[in-house]
Length: 240
Image (cartoon, rainbow, N blue to C red; front, top):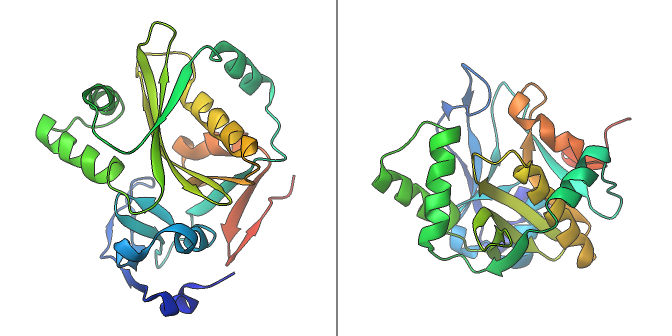
């Protein structure tokens, strides 16, 4: 597997960001290692970076590079060996009525309205114009093969939208937003659907970004088993 210093032949460089407040651990600061220029990172090169723990946010491909903390571990699901537990099987059965459609990254008023409602409920609300700019930069900007997947109920109402990056060996779950008032475990269903999407294409991995043991927000990721964590330059399966 290539290391970042072995990717120079692709005219890719790496730089570290200035420290910024950590989104997951209180009173902590984070830094990221960013691959540039972003326009050159696509296809097989992006897949190589994903296999080394990198992830995409808008036009940026990055991985954590904190000086005193290595809590963020990339996590990926072994889709071929995945077995849904009892709760996950119930969710699959309960939401199997949802209809899905894959779309290119593009603006849809209905999608943004759902995104804005989701953000208002889950996070500190932003002014409308600022939220629109964030949505375009974060979710509709990509230099790789990305798509939107919308989930609608039988009445045609939009319940959820997932953003995925697609590579030869699988997919990366970039972001999912959904009806914030639903009690139907839509977020879990989105991951289960993406696992099945990869399995149907015989792709071995679904990447779920980063996992932090101390973060309660991220504990759901290890409920999808078996999974692998990227640590000390290699992927490994945690001991049972």
